[in-house]
Length: 356
Image (cartoon, rainbow, N blue to C red; front, side, top):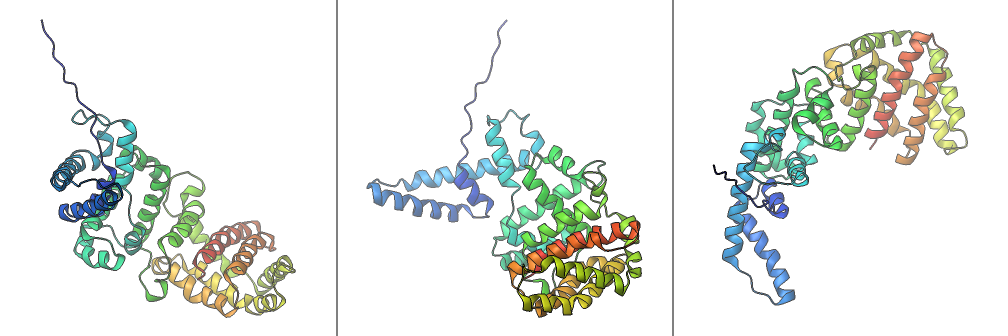
């Protein structure tokens, strides 16, 4: 009786070439890039460049990447169990993390849009605006759609489901959760007045909303909006002018000695208008249009008031943190106080993120 076995050599992944492949470079563009790089090295060492070898190696790399993509990277959990390529676990992990990474400029253009196949027809235009090659844009869009479709009907924690299905890092998982949350809620992000808001600014707000205004507040990983809380926000209509005046007094006392006197006077004179605009946004969030327009309303109705106060970026963070913190000390019923603080904690943080 005889037995046979196959011994394979570990596959060498050239991650410099992989990076260019991910960026959407053609084979010719990658060869040109590699030749230019090798020429620079050769000039310093007086070595000769083997152009044919670089062309052949690039072709081999692209063939390898295409096979790994089609067979395994689109279903990362299968990569560890395959026997076609001898890939050490750390190399497998690096392939997955880099393949599912994305350009923030491109992702910014997707925020709030439905992750449907219809977006593919706009990829060239979006890519041009984001300065990302169309081939790379298609990969990134397909990845977002693949992750979304794989987890949208699963029970349990969204971050947990993404990690078990796609083996993404904690950091990358959180970004995918935020993008999916933005898409699911169809937040308006495309208006002209919102164009200054970067991907990272939106992500900061998203994180706070998910942690405090969704069912994650009581159940980790559930990003469904806490409808009871949103309904309860209507009760903020009963916040009186006396309550607002008390909040104003508390805020000014907390800021006394920490900001310039003229800034303190400006805050005091604009506080009532800012507070009323803030509460009007809160009571309107029960309506789907107002919910989708939350970022636009923050900028148009509240940040505009902050701009009139003529405070700088550093001062704005100090003031808005104090604005949120003092909300807990306003004399209200226990029910109303909890809603008031839970709302303003997130709202104040988002204002800090979005203040230009």
